[in-house]
Length: 311
Ligand SMILES: [Cu+2]
Image (cartoon, protein in one colour):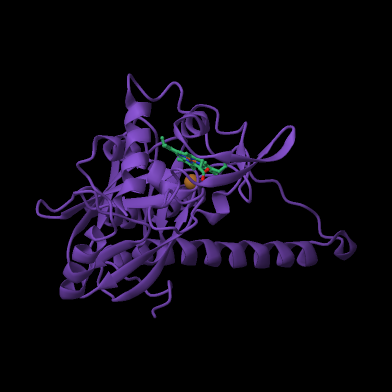
């Protein structure tokens, strides 16, 4: 395991250089200004009875305190630019991964219905992340790679990097996006390209059937960022074994049992906060009434029914 302090991507070195330069300048000035201030306070103390002098203009001094800061600021600009420019120049053959930010989970879509909760990438390979938000503003931040970009609904953003250290690194959301914002984390896992291929092949075997019309709608609407198919509890209950089962739900009138058939499932999607599944929080799932079109909802229910008939 590597720490976040040593940069783990090709972009890290230039970012660190800009950071260290700006930090050092700030440090030197903070110490210098404070020291000078303390000296002046003591040296020109009224008790010593020094008579103040009057100054009017000093061209040499003014040139010095204009030119030196100008050079310093231009150097900051230079270091910043050489770090930033390559970040926006994505190599043509970079591997593309779609990232969806949603309250409060990241999902990494490798295509063909292969969606992962963590970002697994091959070592030493250029990777481009295409960033989309399904709801509000998020920010994808991988400190060890020194990359951070906003993830904004209705705006196609991206970032890229080449991982140069193998290991597991943290991913955070850097835009305050609501209640569970601080829990919106994931891992960036850098592995050998062989291990990566193996992992990607296995990812397909998670039972997601990309061709089913209902599953297409479920995926297109990002339901799987909160609901798993394999029984795992994410933000919401798993979809596994949902259809036909007994659900304990909390309503304004108290707890009750319902059978999860067509009507219940439809109600859960249209008015998710009227019957709240026991053990889960109210207000996390938003209504899909305005989002789903035509017979989308019927297709979703069909998918659940087919899923329950499979076994
Ligand atoms: Cu977020």
